[in-house]
Image 1 (tube, rainbow, N blue to C red):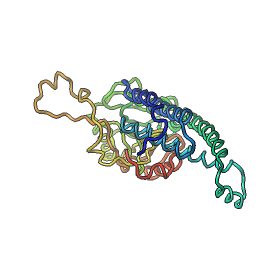
Image 2: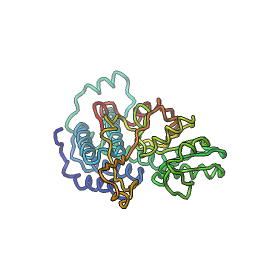
Image 3: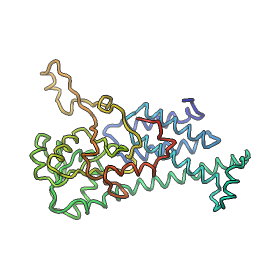
Length: 339
């Protein structure tokens, strides 16, 4: 892709965002989404563009650079694609003047070539209206967690036995169960392979026996894919398979900025790996020879293993996830792209 104007201006901001993504411990998904939105806001605020097409090229180019640096940071890609849809919508509003026109006047306005003065005014109006739309998206992000937690009362009952995964790493799950605990204090909660103040610890080897008594499985998601499948933290696939064996419903909590409008080709061959230190200690590793330890970062959960997705606006079955893609992404921006 041809390098657009203004790329060097955002080098410092882009590096700062990459450093945020690589920080340990990892930032929450909400903070990453907001940081990406702030980065894109800076592009629109300071970018050197004279038309909608130039602005779209700049944002697309910055997204490609971010994906080259962090290919599995789906939230970054999703937020920038959402902003692209806003740019297109606000551009159309600016071009039509936001007026209630008749079909005849609307057709004339679409065909009339804008003057250079009109283009200058349109660029200023586009910048202003897009920044206002970004502020609205940020406000939606702020209320997203609260709206997800509002479903906890209906989805968790006082007699439930719930098994979850990665509770300590997911702020969404913690808030969800805290909300459920306020309404139903007596339900039992177990989390796999970690210690938490909110739940009793359960070993991964005890998942299958414990699933006989479970009534719910609730997991977080890294990304929701168009076919209703999802990418979740490593280890959740065994939990979902055990749930299917015992006919236990699997609920997935996810914010709207995790809805990913593309598939990941050859996921099992190209997914990222992390250090095996979390599963094998260094002392134990020294006693092993000719052993290759693979510790994947994510699991791909097929749609048939998921019962419901708990989102900020509603609760959806996996086949209906694709309907939300049109709410946040424009077809011209998501065609012919992959991770």
